[in-house]
Image (cartoon, rainbow, N blue to C red; front, side, top):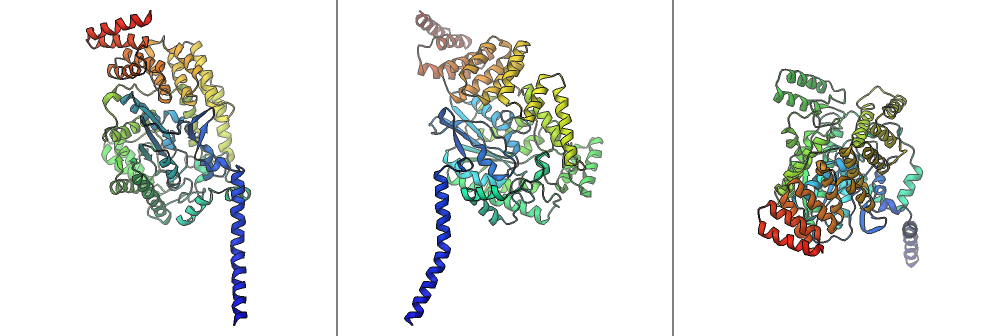
Length: 586
């Protein structure tokens, strides 16, 4: 009996060793690789800014984990690693619309939201960190939540849902070809390890041609019928992930603002071949011709709902968003309603099937701003904000991106990868030979032979030589988004722009951007002076009061305070500041 028990014990011990030893070896190997810094970039969501270690910025390498042959372009929004009490910090989560496609990030709705918040609260430090990325789904949002919470945002804004079918780990995507939500969750956890990342890179094969657009490369179950298995799987994963995200933010005490989804109805025919979808769209066109926009919208909406190539989210996604916002104490932002208030959703607000143009992004920003306003974090000073202007290089680059997008699947279905590549090469040649600097620079950006900062700096200096003041200031403003800590560049832009009184809106926007990063007294004084010239007396007064608290002998502040008081009719107080100015100037 004793012999049998001993034998059984040894067998159990050997079995346990056979299981445990490989695990121990794997854990040890993982630990050694981590200590050696292998694959560190893919595991860190935020990294320090080179030369400014007090700031961190989102790490593109972290987002690359969702793809095999693609690294999404991300916003460059440095924010303070240790959050001061006076900072109002907002994170924006979502896909390519949140990222600002087809423009660079500083023309998307999160950047415009930052401008509105700054205009409403000129004495508060505003940080809007855009974490939007092309082709990511709610799985990425769920994966990001912990890192976002660690950085203590005051609010999170979310615009997501269009990528639940063809985005990374989408229900019908080539990226993350797993059906089971449990398996997807396991793989995403494994992707946080060095060993899995190395193994995945070793065994992965090149996917569809990188010469094709990303839309063509991510679609697996291209035809997804209304109510079908893949259709329901997209809704289920979206609801499950969004519920988890909103719960996590609610538990952390973070205000969350989630937007309903909108898309181009009038000017985007169905992307698929569903007969009922095509018929509904044709009916909408006829109703619009008959001057019946209400019924036309319903027909276009039906066409979108039945479109079996589901790059546009179905209305069921909006139903989920509304229900979860109500259940989980998030603030619903009716982006769809904001677009509808502008008329029938079409090319007047969109660049393609769902990405807004500059006006559309401003409408989105206003909708989210209004949502924040209801909670007392904004006010009516935003009414003074100027119209949105996009710099000419970004306009040309955006137009090139849209031409490229619409030259391939699903917009042009019969085009082969080789034909698509040749057509794109011809587009680039057209831009390079157009005779317009902005077109040439846009083509060079698309070809990867120049960088946005290089292109913008060259364009700014060329515009100065050509006496195109507005274009030069727009280029400088865009450039400051890429190089917010470049004091020499700032001085160059201000020296040029300060003499251009007719373009105070563009100059003020650029100065406000730099104040967002660092509230230097000289920059606060400059911004206050610009706002005085614009007649924004309340905002100027708040800024000058901040300067006075920090440097009561600032001659620029004293001079502008005297001017302000004269404009408001308080001549007695103005005399006091004028006397102080003269005394400090001696």
